Length: 175
Ligand code: ZN
Image (cartoon, rainbow, N blue to C red; front, side):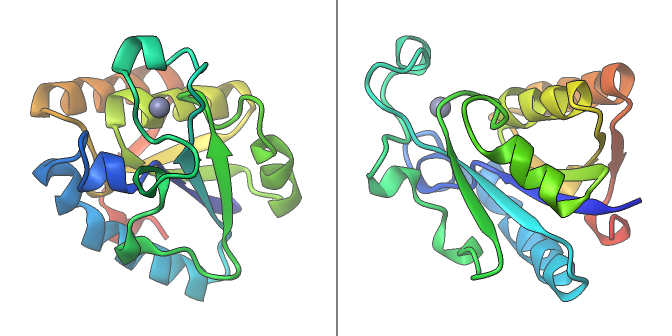
């Protein structure tokens, strides 16, 4: 099993900004610890970063958020990417659409993706789905992901486990 870590939307708008909140903030130290351990083990770290233009479909659903070139779409300072990491901007829930993520993952040789970040039921789940369609095994550490409320979080974890065979575990046993 060769792993890669995919960090989903740990950006200012979704953690401390207008769509953020205490649930997203609570996972930051766990994600930081996992990334630190991953880098030490030589596991590739790929950040996905919502980065929208005004014509994006999501504008009609959520209104303006994570606009390209703004502070809101920057990765939070606590999880600042390192030189060896890859950062990919995305315009859809799934980072596999219209980006270099598929080829970036292929180059790593990974067969298993560890997905962390927010929101569990939106971008994390859609990336898990797309990873599944692309042939990857998926692992989601439940202490490294969050939704706006407990119900959405619980339902999404259950859905990913049942439908995509995602392994749900604690972050300290993932790597
Ligand atoms: Zn978005």
